[in-house]
Length: 138
Image (cartoon, rainbow, N blue to C red; front, top):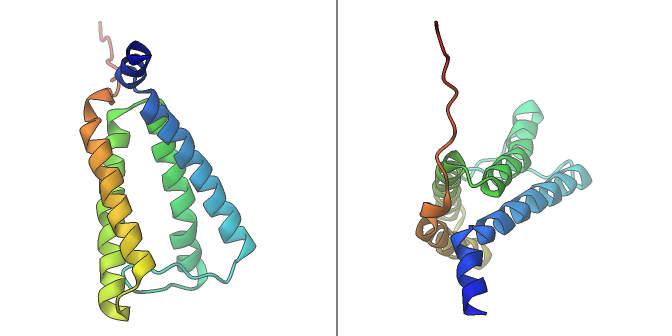
């Protein structure tokens, strides 16, 4: 059992599973947005309407899908993209709380996100550098 557990983590299967969960999360986000078209997502304490609001809402499923794809293939760019997304999301949530007041659900999401981010950072060696294409000029 211990050998299988070590192989599971050495191969990065936990990161691949998280990639699948990111894709599922993006799909759920998309269905949520389509079910509630008037929902305005708060970003840095601000909501947007019109095409800007749609852009802000629909970028979240696409980001989740991209990160999920990168996690599935354990690409290094997905690691950095996730960390950037984590930091921007936490800053947005903190800003929203500063403007609108403390909210326990938002605070819980920040803490859980940071703990999840710490786990991803601890598993950074699983992510591979992206393959580069080199041109053979003769």
